[in-house]
Length: 279
Figure (cartoon, helix red, strand yellow):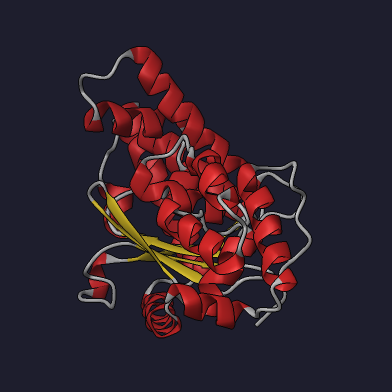
């Protein structure tokens, strides 16, 4: 298993807890697998806590204090690491996404959050939360746009997205918003910030008919898989499960249009929306 990296405890409470957990484990003379065995979790799970790719939950904080003789250090401090601006079901996935080196994502009906424009995101949030105030909607959109900044850093993650054709054809926010959004996606592909493929309707049945799929790889921690539904999501680290979903994504890539053809289709649909807006 890859060794944990040196973390800067000043970056976040989770970084501090990860660094302290590594220190306490090594001081106790335990490997990640040995400590995981005492908590009935995998060594990979311990590695993800130390690397900061997973959040420490209260129940595990107590078990760690007991196993490592750290009194109530982790119990007292895990609450700070649990605070998040994201919904509970998505918080861990969003935090892991921010430190991933590779992200592979398939979403059947929508443009993924990392590729959305403010207008597209606003339309979704106003639909999801019809009683929310303008200020609440503005904050939700700002949080989503902040996530997308990871594509603008000097060394962004490799982001490989498979878009279902349904996501291109569903006019979220209207024709003008869709034209802008699809041009934005095409621009990211042109600037080599992302690799994008389109899974066309003509493909018929495919390997991910059941829903969305996001795979994340890290420089110093095992890969994770995130599967999501309505107000629910599961971050999975079981190697066999991750391997099975990795195969699913590979099958999607094989079924989807090649990147050049996909980009041509995205641009064509964007032009159609623009033409329909201004006949």
